[in-house]
Length: 282
Length: 282
Image 1 (cartoon, rainbow over the protein chains, first blue to last red):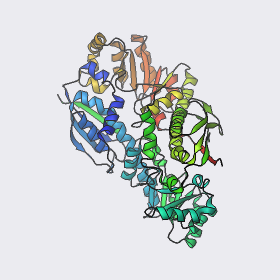
Image 2 (image 1 turned 135 degrees about the vertical axis):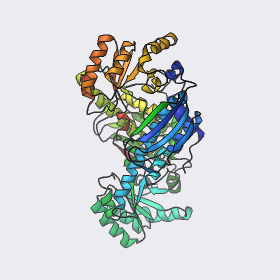
Image 3 (image 1 turned 60 degrees about the horizontal axis):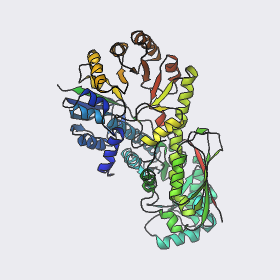
Image 4 (image 1 turned 135 degrees about the horizontal axis):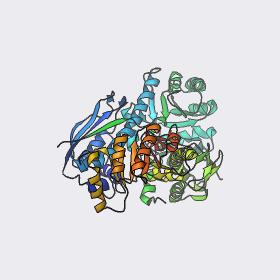
């Protein structure tokens, strides 16, 4: 699980209601009892219901029903149901719904990418980059995984990935053998991944003993040619496709033999569509 | 201006680098001097350069050039330029770029909506809802305004908007006259806005003395009919169109006479495309 702190949940509520819900306060809704129910308006892989439940509970609502993140829903399926004070219902109605819609949009798009990719290669990985919208890492990665993806990198602290922009300061692709040797003397618990923009750069990385090559923006045809050449030199090398991967081309990269398909496209999905029903219980 | 706290900026950096940049540390980039330049790859209304500058300065870079948020850029225009330690460049390269791309995507889409709407009515307002992605209020509202929009509501604390879901607890649209009278006894400094889903509900609000009616998901034709009827009863009433407004229909709602066009569509724009160049200065 990705742990959301109480502060994470509180911030969502407080961002929308920094100084009270002016409308509900003026109407004097406090003390009346109501019910909120959320339903899927389209097919979706739902996500962040657990965080919505915590949000609901924080404002004193009793949660009667909630589906788990990662559940595939049909049109009309119930996502959440809770009861309690009408003022509390209005406090979290939109914030909880917007979070579920946003996260489920990412989960659904990841699911689509994974389905397309795995139609060509059942064992391919679909990985989400760290280029999600700002401040959204936890929700983006939770949704990515709910949809069948994995994080490519959770950030700069978890992995070794040599970009061309690193190699500008270390002598270029020609110095990769010594560079990789030096890295391995220090860090033996991580794969060394090298980004490449051409067959020549990829081959240099493969010969230098990289564990993986991340090919950026090659066509599927060029990707496959480069893969064959790299595997001749380095049979176990992991081949990663990245750069502009989306629903229109992911199957082609999977067919071209990629082990991992890296994308940011899922993070910019349109939000899923939910229906919220509020009822007066009195 | 929307004020970003130091903590807001720090969180962006720390989210991506919670425990050091493993790659740059292993490569020993520290101490080498480099330059980072960011350029527009497409036409865009740029946004959040000020926050990128603060991010750059926080890691010790010297910023040599930056365009202001709201500037309209052509392909190839320079957005930012900074120099300093190669390790610092790598620390913020993607985080700063991803923020500018995300915010500029929203600004550009808002600009498009405003242009389309104002082709029919130069004085119409384009307003962004509070249904932006979670945690993103400051960036979303800054980008909205950079693109020529305004916040509809910054949250629940700033305005009075009676939804049908409020009226469920107060006797329905038939009780609006007494309800609005009671609100005005308490709160005289805010407009009373009533959401309506039909001409009948809108007319009830207009007759009851609402300052504005927000018509949800009416067609432009029905919107115009309803506007005429409401203005007969309440000539000064502000007419707001909301629900599913995007580039395909915003001009029609503007032509139908809406004073304000409320949308969330701009928040789910694809990110703008930037080019980042890093150079070794030695």
